[in-house]
Image (tube, rainbow, N blue to C red; front, side, top):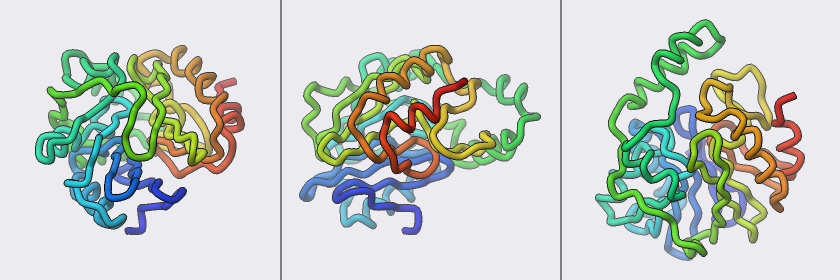
Length: 243
């Protein structure tokens, strides 16, 4: 698949419909970080096959946050293959849809004049962005998190209350989710940045969370949107910090 990039041995970044997921392999076992939109399901399955794995090899599904473009196939994979869907405890009620912290249709409509917003919104609908993606069995990840890839959770609230990045210290990789991205259809710039303000539940918190990322030892960042960023976490944070 052309949309898969091997970042390090056992670490693959996959591009879906304007969103990314990450495959971590260790022996025959797999950790999947995020799952794209509901409409990306076949691409998720194809990406596992492309790295020589099957859904049955999944040891865990980790979620950075419970927006529909990251949670899309989590329930399906979790229930079909008896795989735990794990996240920060503050994100569990969000994943269960006991509450919701995401951009509303009204906000999208109010910002429809901005470049890229309407085409992006159309793709969201076509990718299943309005479907129910709730995960009733969402669970808190154990600490330490003993799954393939040995990811270390880094709580980065702001985009949502329970947003979590995942640091891979041995690989020098940082999976940033939506706490820091490198491109988005609604942004005019490329490179390390925050999503536009309208996407964040708590803008001030999202800005503050950059400090939690900047001190981590990583020379490759894998964002929830956009290509991999090759450079230190500190450099990426400084480029992303709003002025």
